[in-house]
Amino acid sequence: MKITKLETFGNDYVTFTRVTAEDGSTGWGQLSTYNADITTAVFHRQVARHALGTEVDAMEDTLQRIYEREHKFPGSYLRRAQTGLDTAVWDLRGKIAGKPVVSLLGGSPGRLRAYASSMKRDITPEAEAARFLRLRDQQGFTAFKWRVGAECGRGQDEWPGRTEAVISIVAKALGDDIAKLVDANSCFIPKQAIEVGLLLQDHGISHYEEPCPYWEYDQTAEVRAALDLDITGGEQDCELSSWQLMIEHHSVDILQPDVMYMGGIARTLQVCEMGRHAGLPITPHAANLSLVTMCTMHLLKAIPNAGKYLEFSIEGLDYYPWQDGLFLNDPYRIEGGHATVTDAPGWGIEINPAFLEMAQYRVSSL
Image (tube, rainbow, N blue to C red):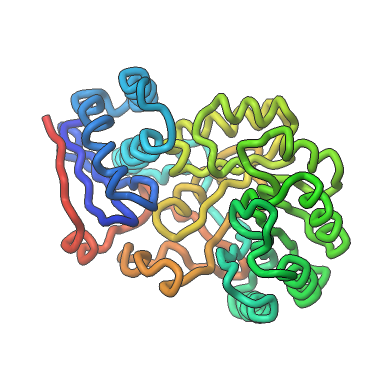
């Protein structure tokens, strides 16, 4: 069955895709968020024209052929655009089969432990601790991640003394029975990263994400060798050669691909398999409540080397105003610190018609 039409509905922040097959059946997907307007142009110009007329069941090979035909344009934008094809086809396949995507991947629906993930650095340590405690009490989260350093900060803190304060204050507030994670977002040189890592260990923090610039695999490996807690990374990497370098250099203990940045489920599965061969678990990056978190939920319930938990953004409309009204149903309920993958066909989501009516629309068709 051939692909006959590819549509996009979106804005500068988030764009949904819809694939139509020759029998009229459809599936919903999404381009990667952030600069989605640029990715939309790439999708119609460099992805759709190669995908139209190809077989739905040959999507994985089609993705590779797109890369080969667009070989002069490697990198993030092409992969982010390919995600729109991949995720829409998985939804289509699920709806045709009457099964959730997780079942197509060899897994089963069910509950997933989630960690509450803070994106904020413009928040005081005391305020961060207070909102974590509220979420613990209201939604039952048993794991939390917060930010240290400054994003790609060249060794600088968000403000002087914040890193040391937010580590100690939040860790003490959460206590011993909560899993504690931090993200440095490529801030430190190795010497600084190790000093911060020792402080993390002293406060019972088990997950240290992107301590050094993510592209400096040997720097991160140096930090990993010096510390006992888990060093993690990979959210920004979209080429398989980068993952191979990360594994060969023993840079991390946990791999963190982002389904949307990678180019979709099919290519993320390749990273998961690389991790399995290397004995490394997969705890994907999923930093907002667009379709990326749902795709990640289905993935985690299917792979044999899934990490301990799902990343679940706790930021609301004050941080991500574009998240408002994306879905008709409520796919992201947290109960007892867990999210749930349902047995609904495909991704199990309904795009809000009001969003679609307001969105910028483009179509490529045979």
